[in-house]
Structures are given as C-alpha cells and as structure tokens.
Length: 201
Image 1 (cartoon, rainbow, N blue to C red):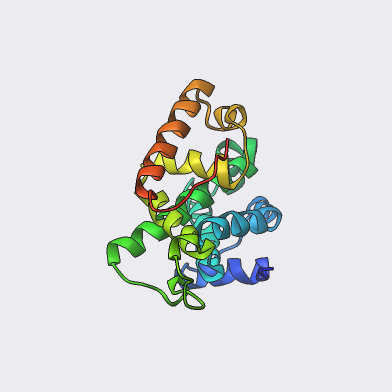
Image 2 (image 1 turned 90 degrees about the vertical axis):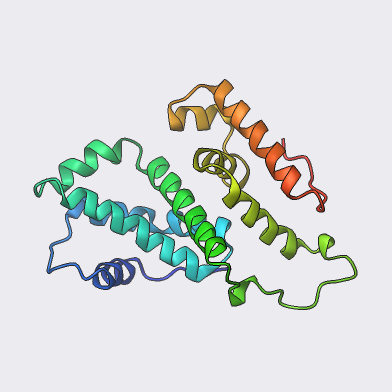
C-alpha cells in the first residue's frame, strides 16, 4: 500500500517549488484539491508505478489548475466552475493520466534508467515471465502511443472504464473510442511481442 502525503502540505510545497508569489488559495480550488488529491495520486501511480513520480504528477496537475484559475483576472472560483467543476473527477483523472505518460516519455527521451526501473531481484530463467518486467515494458510502450490513444487506453484498461463511459467523458462517439482502443492494443501487442498478453476485453 502506497502512503499518500498530506494534501495541504503537498499543495503548499508545489506552490513554493514553483516560486509563486504570496497568494491566497481560493476556497473552491482548496476544496477541489482536498477532494481529489488522492484520486490524482492513485491514477498517476497506476501508470508510473512509482510513488515519487505520482506525487510529482499530482503537484504538476494541481499547479497547472491553480495557474489556470489564477490567470482569469482573479476570478479563480468562476474559472474553476466553468472549466473543471462540471465534471471535476473526470477532468483531474485525465489530467493525471496525461501528466504521468509525459513523465514516462521524458525519461525515455533522456535515455536514463532510474533506480526504480531496476529489477528488485534477478529475473528468473525467462525475463518475459516476470510481471515487473512486463509492467515496465507496458509503461514504455504506452508512452509510444499518441496522446489521445494513451489517454483512452489508460482509461479503459488501467482505470476500468467502459467504452461508453469514455465516450461520454471525452465527448466523442463510442465507435471512435472502440477504434482507438483496438488500434492502441494492436500497437502495444506489436511492441510487446515477446510478452504473453492476456485478453483484457
């Protein structure tokens, strides 16, 4: 079980790290943060597999949201209501998915291997039977998908939403969701050919 950090402390540290000037946090933003910090963290963790990365993603998501709300001539609460609060859980879940995939992409472009990417113990006779290796390979393959395809794949198979729910969430047709899911799975199967993937329909 991954322990989530204190929400208020995380928000303050995110603003401090970004060197934000002295500010007053709007009450509506504070409510959204407190209500959904755990959701954002868990969503990011499912994709990154790393608590530190998931916390970084959480800070990124809420810092972006704060800056968006604060940039509207001080009408932070109004901006939040118009842009986010109509379906805040969906908005933040998607933001977490995209930010988490960005973290994986940036690591790949840096061509560095973090300590958390190293196996905790030597692989068995066939590394393709090692679930940790499969998860790592899946994260890398997910980062190779186009942003919309990565988002939909994560919503479908990591977050457990149906095609119909995703279609409503993204305001697109269910047929389009099905096509994107099919193509994403085909691409991932090609990239993960050495691994035995189960049918997740």
